[in-house]
Image (cartoon, rainbow, N blue to C red):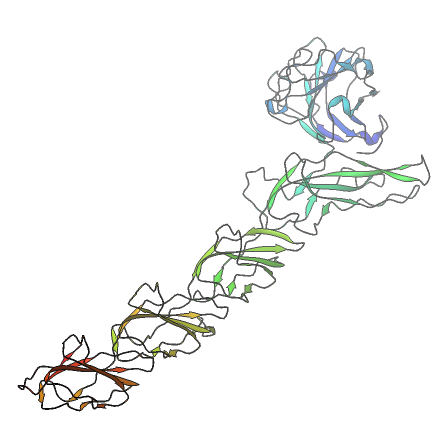
Length: 615
């Protein structure tokens, strides 16, 4: 293409099809078909005998290249059947009379979708021209008359020669084996103002090929761009997100501004573009390119170039699906882990999200890092987690998220608990457990308990009411208060450095019962003659002793009682002759009473021996 052309000049003869000199009647011989254009016109030329015989040349133009779109019959009734792929939208008839063809004898028909127009225009009426010389004919047709627009830009075309009286083609260019003969014609050539886009190739929505990054775009040079007289100085490239090219994503204009005339224009820009970033990331993209050229304007000062653009190339479609992070791994699951993944080609950084919500609505971790590992500076609570990684390339272009990986975080349970289950202790026990210091698979320490929380429940395995509790940094603890005799449950859990509580152990049951004293004197079943001195053995841990005497086995009412620090008691009153019951229990420093032991003695009566009863 040139900005302007002169009708009939030699440069217009850009051959697009040919046929051998093989027709019996040389009047109808067609050998070469030419086509070129400027900014407003198409130029179609062909070699012709131009004899004195009346005949017709018919040029079919298929502009949309779609099957079964276009005319299924000839506009003037000739028999020119063509395959569905090349049904024409325009037909140009050059009517030769007496060896001459004039502009008012060139008729242009267009197909309306259902029929040929009933008021065809002549070349003269639409502002076209014709050039005829010995052996050559060329017509100049306005773009608008034959449907050429910025979104069309190309034709499939074929030229036929026929007798003026009618019938089927006697010759054609390009060559078709069914001409002459009246059979269906399938051979058309193509001509286009469009550039030929090459890379990335069009996948048509079928090819599964996907590009992990946006590669450079390539296309062919415009025809004639190598000429010093070429008007082309560059290109305009657009990338859209829809096939109708209405949602622009990126665009770029590549050009070399020429100096003012009469200096020769510079060479055209190379036919490729590199994008500084991967457009807008993972998507389906549609791209096209068209040439641009300058015309120097002298209409006003300062003189300047006016930019014009050719038609767009055919739209090209490709899929961009960037590499995803692979091999997602948690270092441990018994503590807040280090998250790691494999290095991804082209990655500038990575987004990491960790959440208990599979939709990642409020992530616990939501960071960007240039590393392929990340260890949170805080701890995560126990729970079931989802995590994923996204690659970001240069320009903050994001790939898709990786596949979601899951793990269950459970701080370790304590082991080695004492007292052991079902233990019987005779005082408030010292609770012990194994300290927590955990390593990863490489032997590197990754977790130590900051503290431990111990809970004691009295008779309640569900711990609905806590009898005693402590947070301690040690792995043993002894209560600072006495425990009543009875059944108890205890459990322990670790606490991490941020106060997050691990899972409690199962409740361990133990029974606490203080030891009983041994009644020394008077012994069980003894008979004494007067008020005796009571003696019992000392017990470790006793702060004092509770001594009680009663004439009833239920010890209601009491006959005598005292709390003493001694293991000997001499009543301060005289006991009357009777049968008595006596018992002693220890009292700890918190006033907790141990179990009693009982004995019976008779003062001033018959001697009776009864067994010792411990309650």
